[in-house]
Length: 153
Image 1 (cartoon, rainbow, N blue to C red):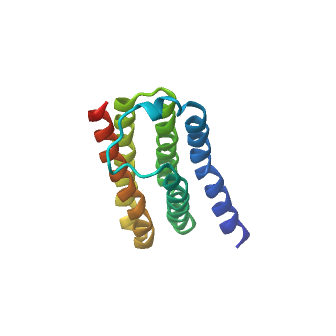
Image 2: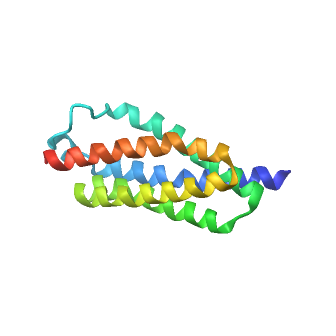
């Protein structure tokens, strides 16, 4: 029983490394560049991102944990952690390097990994699949937002 919850804690800790890296890159390199680019009218206010991403990271953590505790499938766990690498690098690319086009490519890679994970979750645990839908939806929104920012700048 303890190992099951220990694995959840480890997954949560590893998962939340991604937003810590992203937050650092954002806080360090966002301004003045971000204030000077043209944003689409549907760009959410900055305060929206932290609570949305916190919820999404929790949902994706519980999704992979449910898979792990039921199957101990290291292949899916590796895919998840590779996906987190790309997730954490988006902020570095966008805010750190100020590369809107490379950030868009990174988002495509993230979306491919999300779809791959969702396909695997579908086979193993439907609740894990459902837990990924908000993340997938938000990532599609981020992709569209990124396209518009690229077009406007």
